[in-house]
Image (tube, rainbow, N blue to C red; front, side, top):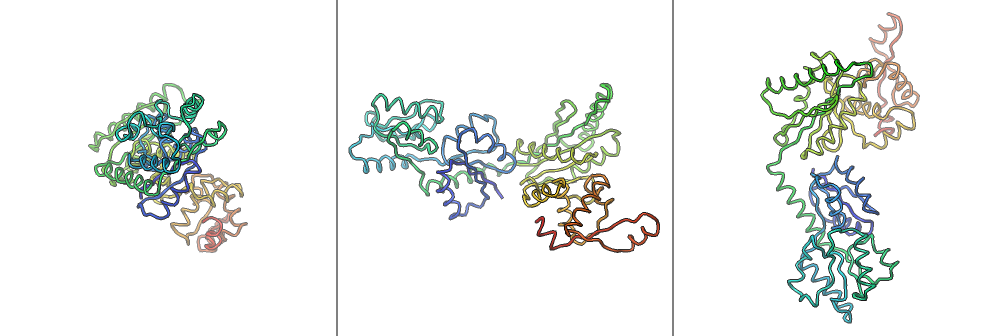
Length: 438
């Protein structure tokens, strides 16, 4: 499903919320509120990993992100006025304020970038409102221009779409009318954005990014580092040639980045597993792999970075994959691949409250979801989670105290008793497990 970020000042979100609730756009919305423009920086970082398009309630946020991130690959759009909408706003203002001439008002949403919405085609220049003609389209410059017009006695009113700027206009004692987009305008803008996105996706390729890191400890000499990097590069180029597949290889210090374009929907984890198993068999040194797939190269690399973090946490020669919605899969060399997601706030809070590593709890949930009736030992858990047996035993002891798991008896357990040191085996307490973690 297409994921759309709705980015808006607080006061502008209500009409957008209403539209989302009452119309089916065939997508999932993620809502973000900004109080100042710089908040959009953090919003964008979050959007990179989960959204296909960013929709702004107005032009200010749209222009900010386009100027701040000129190489942004996530499609962006905003609630756009049509000329008829602007003429309607001016007509309504004139009806409500018949004594104020149009050439005595300032419209802060008619700018160079939107060609003043063609208003000059319909209203003679001498009767036109003041437009914002500076290319620096932000709150500070809008306010400065409005104050200049007011101080010079050129305007009596402002028609403002800059909702977050209204408090500043109050402080300057400049009369204004806040202009909100109509429900019809919001619906039309969202549908137009979705239509454009889907048209772009007709011939779209999936972007695959793979990051390979060679963890060098301080005691590894320069010659050994160079040898490992050269060996890795040769293996990647040989694999590419032998398999007759195309991908680019970019080398940095102790890291390689692979990028390839795939037919949309054709990616299979086995494609990564194949080269992973070859590397585990033939390379005699440490490596970590993270892979990501998305419709944009930027997002696929973002996912690959997260997957590489998981591989680093795992601490063994293996690979992890992160796909849409941030779901992690791995380790990929295992016949039983875990799938987990850091959006499970309930599980994350449980982990923090009980002093258990968050990733280990999420992996345990994946084990539960794959087989609720499975039998677990500390040795098996350590292998699956990539932790020591002692750490696994501590986790199991904590879960046993909380009645989330229970001891179980079976033939293997009885055999271990006869051979010497006993091995304890556990089952999930289904109801307690779900209540605590799901």
